[in-house]
Length: 351
Image (cartoon, rainbow, N blue to C red):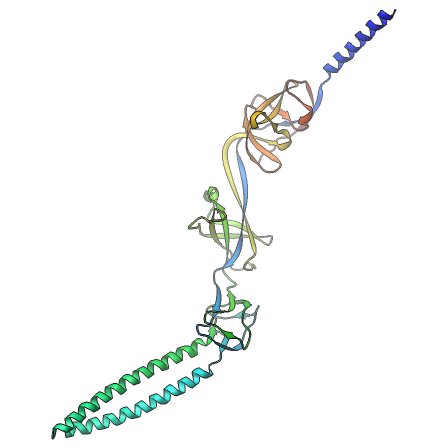
């Protein structure tokens, strides 16, 4: 009797195992669709600059006497932004003018003497000698007069340059010096920005320069602008290893210097392949990638090459033409050559 019971238990276990082996693993499958190539999307960043941006300064050192415009105010071309104290220059000008008047009087007297000695020189030798002396004196006075004129012209230039004049219309972005301070030669007084003709400088990788058109869409502060290409870059940036390209924004673009700019570059690569979800990829041997193809309710591992990923999908190529479906996810539950049942089919995605 005991032997009969033991035989019945063995037969029952064998039946259960056989039944389990015939069960199919339920999976979600992804439908493959052959594509001629893939589109790659890259974003590059840069900043807004102004065509005219200048740090204005006085050419000569001096005390700041007046400031007519402050930070954030608009200035038109030719308007005086600030002036220096010109009291010493005015005194120097008066001194030079007085010396000039003195020389003029001396020159006038010397010319009178010259005429008198010209008449006397015809009668005696001593008068001829005095005529030579007067003529030389006139030449010296004339030279000194010319030197004074040059000095007066220099003072006039310095007086003119004591006024800081706007070279173009724009907005004063910063004021660096306060009233009453001594402004050194070349020290920045204000930073002037031209509001129109804003530009964008972007670093574009060498591999993407062929994808840059004459007009590109550029985003600044969540607004899109059609920008015109001005320069494709003359050299590669030593830090970012990119070409610094310049684009011109529309005149009415309400942007500010220093704002972040972003441009999306789209390229198409001809490479027959398939878009698959990243969840369908798994590690293969020796650092390769593989997917599980579904055919006749059986799955097989297939090695693939990954060309591009966008964070959600991967574009791959490989021997997938004989497998219209692949396992979409849950790869840790499957293995090659097992029987499966497709309970859900996901549509293919084209990008």
